[in-house]
Image (cartoon, rainbow, N blue to C red; front, side, top):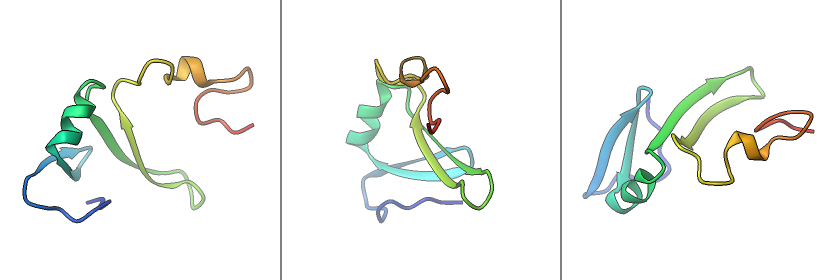
Length: 79
């Protein structure tokens, strides 16, 4: 399975995340290394919640689930 945000070009690095082929420019790969790299997955929680998720392995300071939740729910929860 592949996810295309742009057409692959010469000079892009390729890797596989969760069975999905990923192509990125080296400068973006270098920027993401400080966050442990990128995780790409496909989720299927029914017809209203189906698609690709793109995240980093380590969240930037202040953006982890411990800091973005509310009393009613955690990250991604709608209130």
